Image 1 (cartoon, rainbow, N blue to C red):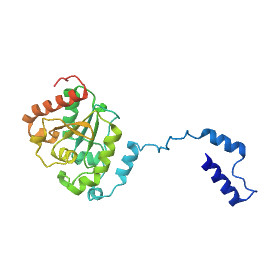
Image 2 (tube, rainbow, N blue to C red; image 1 turned 135 degrees about the vertical axis):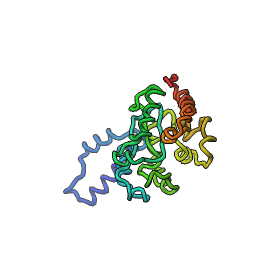
Image 3 (cartoon, one colour; image 1 turned 120 degrees about the horizontal axis):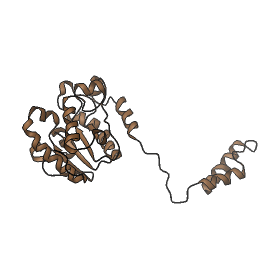
Length: 232
């Protein structure tokens, strides 16, 4: 507080005796409110809504120029699972919400009928927040443009387990070009959080025989999250 007193004295000299900044009594009251020595000042943490606003304003890559609506993500803090897809598709681009088309219906069934919890209890997002034209895979510079958003979301949401839906999401988080059949099966980690790789729901719609393998992946994720097996 000596620094505060010196500051007040200096400004009192600058302004002159006719413009006192604080009375002696007010200065003592201010000193009483100061934090104890050794406790650093901490800014308020940036929440999800602030990140969503940044995403809505973002034009860092070509996707921001052609999108209808960005799709930041949705879900609660500290969920058992955070599902990460590759990017919004047509219906998501129209509504601004993740996984609301046919792939979203399948993902909802995987969560509610398979895992056995409401979809509202998990967090869902994508690697890129704007739709790639024609539902093509996001390009490397587009993934990098959204990378900071995704990492901050993971840090704020604090899921128990990350579930990568498909090759693009797995490659982005694990920084690898290994094929999905190699990345599946063995749980991995991202920033200390267990990570499970499985098929994207769009792939499962085209290849129903892969649903059995996806269910095995979900069971691994449930075990890592400490949840009992669902209905399957």
